[in-house]
Length: 219
Image (cartoon, rainbow, N blue to C red; front, side, top):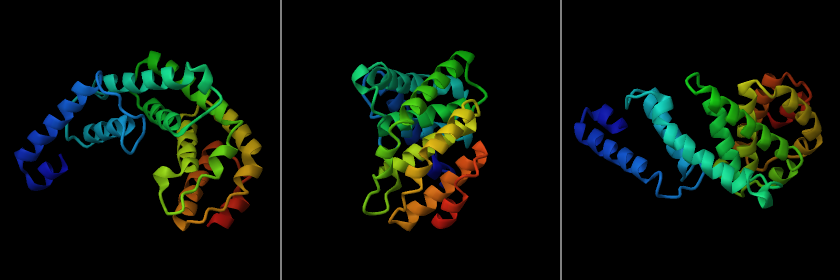
């Protein structure tokens, strides 16, 4: 789609439309991984990008409805409704929560979805609260932000905070997590920079001033 616009070439647009149609046709048949880099979350954000930038036309709620349902079914049956998984919050669940937090910030979703997505996010946040230390010591040897579970966790929490419905709980959890989080000084300067930016946004949104010294150390 981008090349079609840059070069004013309908050939690229035709190919892109065929690819997009094939993705939709496979939604009910193919099991996509629920991640950003290679799975259904990445597809969802790509479609959102196309809509926002006018590459394709359509109502976002209608266009993303099947994608939303696919992500929700995977999240519910593989994680929330799976009693053996309830004590574990993994990368796939965080990405799904990140996506639903982004969707909550759209004004065009139905009231039923608002209720469901808030319940999902509360579930993930509550279960994350007791195992945050399992995310902290996961830094890859090389700079690889999509493989760094702690960064995915921070992205998720920041997007939940932007929804502004559970921030009192998040603020309490930031106090609970403080010693663990402030014990981490990543090896990669790139990771330090991202963590600094995410924590700065999170503490600003939740109005938590308890991390200022740690943020200075990161900077």
